[in-house]
Length: 207
Length: 195
Image (tube, rainbow over all chains, first blue to last red; front, side, top):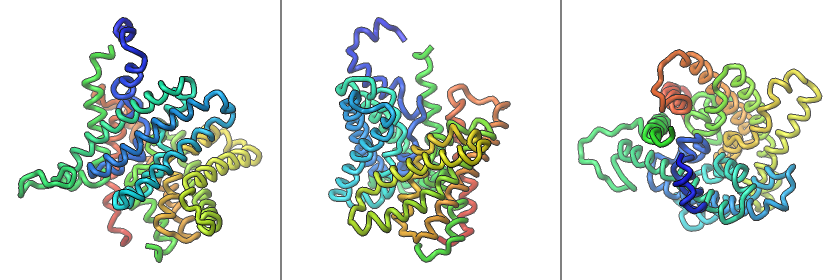
């Protein structure tokens, strides 16, 4: 890390950048993979899930930060969980109303955003100590970074497992599909490869 | 789905619908705490215990409190509160009755509150419309299944210490790939119980 370069950038930009790239939640911190990995077999589901997660993370971080000076230390975890749960309920109700089919397909995973460790992690590590604007950007950056990696995973899983992208067939007839990609082990393999890939290309900058 | 016997659900939750390997729940502790067999066993036991308890409690809360009042959309908050309260209670009871067990599980108990597998079991229970007994069986089965997976992973990782893994793949990367192979093996069980 070169301090001169960091100083030239505004704090907002560096906060965003850290979440998306430098400290990406998926391949650097290995946080919060649980709830969303399951929906990466189709791009449409992943996009909807990611949007919900970005909204919930950014808004939760903002709210936690707003309330950071009035929340008693002892109950702050509980308070954070309740704030997160409220936003997740909003996401869930909105999905049920406007995209009932996708809401059905996502099943319990929308609700599981609550226990997604990224949100709790960002609230606890950053939002509880920083002003609301920065906390919002931090949550946004982390959630976007997370979403990008998941989209990459979903892209390959849908392409290889179903031969489609966003439901449109793209592979020519006669190509053998990798059924395993549509099944749970495919998600694990793709995640492992993604971690490998990103950590490899990130290496030189770290030293 | 709802007519399945409790025993079938129990077995299916361990092997076929393993909460970790086929639903991807509880991944964070699975990766972070699977370095040693001892700690993995402790966490696995704690999760199995709390999962059984909370699936039963959450069933009661959902069926007798939320549903009659038409407050189903509040279930996320209700379940989380029940889970947090249960974990706290279990911690206090264990501390009083069995100090040995308390020291073995102590550090892991608070962590369990945010283990997505616990909340996941309660949410699946609602979606699949299980009865009380079925919910208990499902909770216990999922807990045992999760404990089994993390124990197996801890054993594998101990053997892995001597292997040469590419630097960028070390730690979490290889663990995830191992989990994939494990999930592949568990697919072999899928013919066991007709779903």
